[in-house]
Image (cartoon, rainbow, N blue to C red; front, side, top):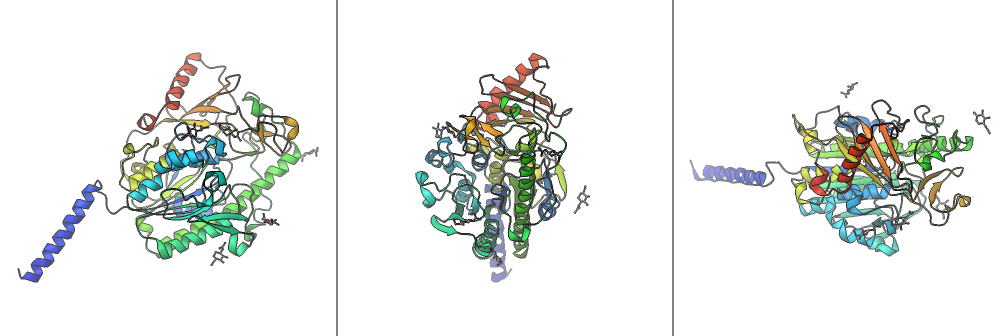
Length: 504
Ligand SMILES: *[C@@H]1O[C@H](CO)[C@@H](O)[C@H](O)[C@H]1NC(C)=O
Ligand SMILES: *[C@@H]1O[C@H](CO)[C@@H](O)[C@H](O)[C@H]1NC(C)=O
Ligand SMILES: *[C@@H]1O[C@H](CO)[C@@H](O)[C@H](O)[C@H]1NC(C)=O
Ligand SMILES: *[C@@H]1O[C@H](CO)[C@@H](O)[C@H](O)[C@H]1NC(C)=O
Ligand SMILES: *[C@@H]1O[C@H](CO)[C@@H](O)[C@H](O)[C@H]1NC(C)=O
Ligand SMILES: *[C@@H]1O[C@H](CO)[C@@H](O)[C@H](O)[C@H]1NC(C)=O
């Protein structure tokens, strides 16, 4: 062998050896893949919330896997988003509600939980990270560092100050305040998130990267882009199931809902229902644009794309006009679709996946081990890519919620007095301090839900979801008390879990 050839061989050998070493260090993985998470707001699966998303379903779902049993562990924006970021149940991240006192983006959260969130782990592992859109409802509050506070872990930060808006908002652009008014061309938030994402991909992205895109849709104030303002003109919220049914054997808050609903409530919820769909059409465009740019940049084969929402939604179920915050399926089920390298196209999977599993899955993609973190969730990467996924997967989990109320009165219905909130339209309240509950939701061996309320009655609800998928009949009073005892034991165990014990 002549010298040049020998050098060439040595170089090749050296490069191979390095690859092997690097591969071994990362548990035999190839170069870490990029991750894109698209996180919508209040998008349900149970009352038709996915119907307007045709392009997204084709580009992500049919190109990958749809999870038919995906859940949030808490059905309210800020606690749910905190669970997604931290990979933890609310009893471990301690974000109780949407206000600062309930730890939503509070200084205590910033100090104790934000440093443990998935972007921090990924950035430390060499990922470049990009965020655009709604973060936590109180983000940017003057009492919690203002817009200057850029959460740890983000290389490129475009965080919405406060709760969902479509116009007239402030953005923190890497800690600098950016005011946005009401120009469709310059400010419509879903479009702005799409445009910033495309610009990031084109000009700044450097693999491996993480992108989180969090549009305001389908949250209030439900402002459609002008191009969609007349879409779905005759669409109404679906009737049937538990629509306009009195939840007569449920906890007091549901029982007090007027049933049948006032006509004005029905008109209101139908209008909101249409407007929600209209706002989602802009998200469908966002997905199409981002997927198109990933393809144009030849990044599809190296990028996982996740699509989900923070919680579900209801519109007339059990005569509650519109909201989330209830323990029922419509509020706790969320969409979850994933495409990416090694994922067989057009599958539906039935394993229960939780929002606290997203962080662990992202860490797994990056070659990190969730058991070395404080996360309660579990990586579902094996379910995505293995020909033979693990035979064991959780069969039950915990749903927790701490009710919100006004200490004096709800401004939308002052006559009702203290303790309640979300009392609109027509003075029907959707929340109260004692709408505070913990539930065990089991899928195997039986599909059931067992809930305990922290109210003065210690109210209990139990549903057999196999025979009663609409949760019309609370059977807590008619089952064998030993079953309730066993369910209570399991619930108590989960309420005390942390890390590995949540994954048992
Ligand atoms: C907020 O979080 C801090 C620190 O994590 C905790 O000490 C405090 O009890 C939490 N507040 C609530 C209302 O849970
Ligand atoms: C934006 O703010 C302006 C000025 O306060 C107001 O007139 C307008 O109605 C707002 N637009 C939207 C869509 O909220
Ligand atoms: C987004 O980009 C498109 C195409 O350049 C442009 O027409 C639109 O006005 C932009 N929208 C926003 C809100 O930036
Ligand atoms: C409410 O709507 C129903 C059905 O459309 C109608 O029959 C009824 O008269 C309406 N009630 C009122 C008070 O408008
Ligand atoms: C995906 O599966 C569904 C039902 O199994 C089938 O109708 C559809 O044609 C498939 N789509 C693609 C793109 O393979
Ligand atoms: C949020 O939680 C905190 C702490 O428990 C509580 O003080 C506050 O009243 C709650 N906020 C609402 C709107 O219920």
